[in-house]
Length: 453
Image (cartoon, rainbow, N blue to C red; front, side, top):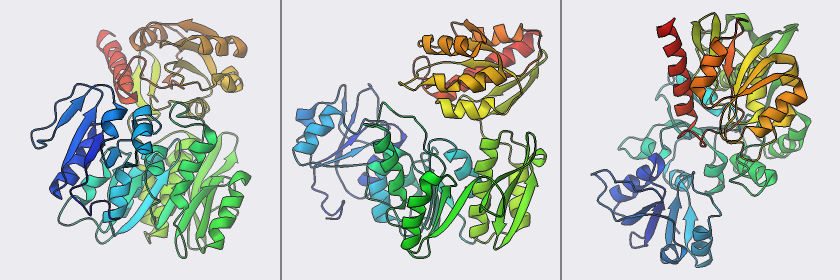
């Protein structure tokens, strides 16, 4: 049945952040009555004159709805949702609505880390094509806002999280990329297999003539073979040679590499020293974006200009400046050990500010990289024990601090002149609303040092 076929279906929207508000506006503009729920005591905007229920979700109440549209931040197996599901309610996310109504070309990117950087660059480069492109999804702009207009864009690039992918029938992207799958969101999925399965839904409807970008590791060979059997054109990326991979980074010496992509059969390269961003992990994302642009027909000159002038995004290994003899780097988006590892490997030696809400993730896996690249650990957050134990295992000096601000003051007082890296390897919600607020707090503390110096 068409999800909006009957405006008489009793509909609930769960979670009234940006996604939930976009769903409410989308439904209201199509004459669908709905009721809104959020566990926080919010006030709906004036343009949404809808019933609003604040407080813990109640399964008895939700079981009375025929359709429930759930925002990504709400646990898919919340007991109240399970009760409503058992009562026969249709339950899905905003991607389901988008998928039903959008008829243009979809470029889609998923992965644990690197999605926003890749999507931002693809959006920037493909915008010069006739008809342009619009970006949405997990990147910050709800995807329904892209099509809740008289003239929807002819193509979109979507950043898709595992939460969005698991809550909808599969989309059909013309070009799709999986950047990585690393332990994260353990508190929102049953296990790593469920997390992986959600990510791989991105490719479920791809077929003849579509393109799929996959990591180079052997663990993805079976998926590549399956997709290739459907007529999907397979691209692979990673660290390796331009003769073996479609795009990625190629080592040219110790700690030196070049980024590459292909335009038809010819490889094009940019030395890492010519890029404004730092870190091999970021350059891999740039390479994937460059290959996407080449696949849509952009010239090598345009791609080179875009990649070499891209300065990166806030909170992703962002250079804040040199203050009191230290270079300061904000990598607050590193909410898991794997992303912190990539940041640490970008420096010979650093003062590392880490800690936060671990979500059950194992930080001991960072022992070797910490031993090799960290001179001093400053641990903040409410869950410090695992990080203190990590420092002891790695043989690195560790100090627990009460706040990001205290960590910045402590680091500034160290006479080594080493760069200072905030790359928490943990989520932020123990002390902050999100990683962006944590990053802003760090940047403000660094700016305050400059005022006092």
